[in-house]
Every structure is written in C-alpha cells, then in structure tokens.
Length: 415
Ligand SMILES: Cc1cc2nc3c(=O)[nH]c(=O)nc-3n(C[C@H](O)[C@H](O)[C@H](O)COP(=O)(O)OP(=O)(O)OC[C@H]3O[C@@H](n4cnc5c(N)ncnc54)[C@H](O)[C@@H]3O)c2cc1C
Picture (cartoon, rainbow, N blue to C red):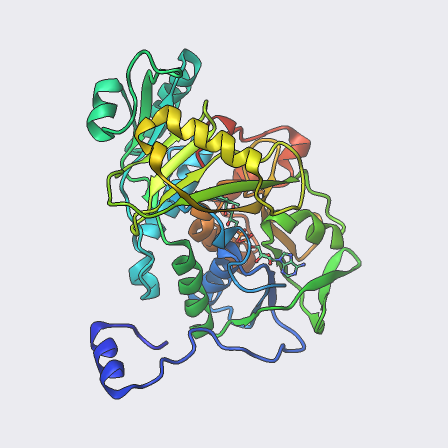
C-alpha cells in the first residue's frame, strides 16, 4: 500500500508525481471465496478484516452504486457506546476502541473527534432511563454519568436550561468518549486498506439474484454476469430485505427514510454532541463549523430519499427550543438515507438458515458507529464458521426464541 506521510506529501508535491489510485478497478473473476454485497462501511470493513486478520483475500465487494453511496455517506457520524443493554454496550464499546486506533491502522486520517455526547432528559421517565443507562454503562467501565442543569450549562452555555423553557431540561446522560468522525474518510480508508490486501471492489455492480442449491449458496447473478461463490454476506442496510429475499431468507425489517440537515458554517461554539429524545432532535458542530441537525426516522415506511419541508420545519422548531440563539442560522441543505429498522432496535448478524448466506443488517439509524466491530466479527464468523461471543445476542434466531435485545431507549433518536 502506498503509505501516506509528510515526507510523501512533500516529495510528490515537489516532483508532481501522481498519487496511485487508492482502490483499483478490476474485471470480475468467475469465482470468489467470499462475495460481500454492499460497499458501505460494513461491507468494506468485513472485506478488510477477512483479508488482514484471516488471510482470506479472494474476496469481492459488490456495490450497485459507488462506495459510501448508502447510509455510510449520508449519516451524521455520531460514534458512542452508552447503550442500554449489556450486549449492546460491550459491542459498541469494542467499535469505539477500534475507531480510536483506526487512523493508525489504516494510515488514513478518519478525524475521530471524541468531544463528548450528551442526551438530555426533559421528564422524569427520561431521567430514569438515563440513570439506568449510566448504571449499565458503569458496570462495563464505560465513561457515562447523569449530570444536572448547572453542569449542563457549564458545558454547553448556549443551551436553554431555565425551568421556564417549554421543555425544561432536568438532567442529561453525559458520555465523554462519544463524538463525531469523518464518515467518507472511514469508507475510503477501509476501501484503500481492503484493496491493498487483495480484495476486489466492484462499483456499479448490482446483485440481481442469489443462487441457492440444496440449501446452500452457490453464486450470485449480477448485471455484469454470474459469480460463483460459496459465501455471500448481505451488508446492504436499507436494501437488506430485498437482497435477503433473493436467498429466500425473510427478515423482520422495515425500511424507513431518515433525514438530516446542515447549516452554514460558523465559528466553533458547540463542543459536545447534543441529543434530545423527547424533542426528536440532535445537534453537533463539524470541524468545518457547520451545525448538523438530525432526528428520528420519517413516520412512514418507504424507499424514498427525498427531503421534506414538514421535516425541516419541525426540526428547526425543536432546535430553537433547545438553543434559541440559533434563530439567525441559515440551513444549507438537507438529505435523506434509508434505515432498516428491526423490532428491538438491535442488528441482525451472523449465519442464516441458508448455508453460506450471512447477514450484517438491521443497522437502523445507528449502524455507522458499528462498522469496525461488525467487520471484525463478520470476518471471524466466516473464517472460523463460529459466531463470535460479541455478536451472539444478535442472531436471527432471537425472533423465534423471543430473546430480543431491546435498545429503543438508547437508539431511537440518539443514533
Ligand atoms: C441521515 C442519517 C443519519 C445517520 N446518523 C448516524 C449516526 O450519527 N451514527 C450512526 O452510527 N449511524 C447513523 N446512521 C445510520 C448509518 O448510516 C447506517 O446504519 C450505516 O451507514 C449502514 O452501513 P452499511 O455499510 O450497512 O450500509 P450502507 O452504507 O447503506 O451501504 C449499503 C450498500 O449496499 C448497496 N446495495 C444495495 N442493494 C444492492 C444490490 N442489490 N447489489 C449491490 N449493492 C447493493 C448500496 O448501493 C449501498 O452502497 C444514519 C443514517 C442516516 C440515513
């Protein structure tokens, strides 16, 4: 892999040398050991760890569009581990740890900024959930505590913490290791690393069908022809059910649009990521100075990625309830992505009843932060034919047994 360094920058600049392509186009092979469908963070991380942790390099990542064109390039880039269930906390904590070293691992700056994450409580029941989460978090050594209005005001002076606010702030769950990251860089870094390790990345290659013979995967049919393989991993997020249907595996998932918006850039004033579950809104400030606003999913299942005026009106109103000083800010743009929602707000990962067909789906509104740990775990699944402990709770069989992993209290808005 072409290593990036200050010396390289200087020497390429002085000699006007072209940088080599970070991931290269290839003709599809007739067969691969593993075909990963979906070139978002999950698919690329899975391919990267297959090649680097397990030496499985005859791997293709197929994406019907360009890499990062799905949720991975549309999310609001919040990373945190202060979930509600012990299984969720352990899982997302591993991802935060991998993110902390990711720039060094990939030799690519992913700009992880651990600036703290604050979830506001506006009523007694929210405060109770915050205390519950703080206890679960602390038991797993996650830095997370409930703080009260004086401390909240000290950390975020622009928040209206007065008792006369329409939705008074009673307290907050404060999580210092949480923060934001540059999502494109994560996608590009994994793509570059996977390519260097021998993985083939095929953009603009759509999977139209999955061949299953005698209960086992034998290949995929793409718009560029057939590829033989005994192992297919479905990492297609908002399209997860359409791809799983090709293999005859029904998933308990519904797809909803999720919208977000960004303002013009202003001087840095907001260090922490602010979330209000009751107001269905969150705000963070990027390194460029823009304010990123997000919310919960649209109320109707759909594959539409159009923004709506109704959304932006509601969002702006709620942001101003929290920070009235932002009333003069101008919105620059809004966008939407697709989210594959499961009944318990936890992912579905691992083996399925079809031999050789694995899923890494159900990422809803919160899956970007899980990219590294998911890639690592899915690669281990494939390489060892066993389910790693860290994803044991997320198997598809939980919907038969009823052992759900209820994360709604920590994942409905906070992403
Ligand atoms: C507005 C918004 C804000 C969000 N904010 C956050 C956040 O702050 N933090 C967080 O953790 N998560 C967040 N999320 C969720 C997060 O973006 C997703 O969970 C995550 O990106 C899913 O990654 P992925 O790699 O599984 O899928 P994606 O990145 O969606 O990639 C799936 C890929 O599959 C491809 N594909 C689909 N069908 C086919 C086919 N038949 N053949 C070939 N390719 C196919 C698509 O082209 C796509 O590129 C947000 C999502 C949105 C929309």
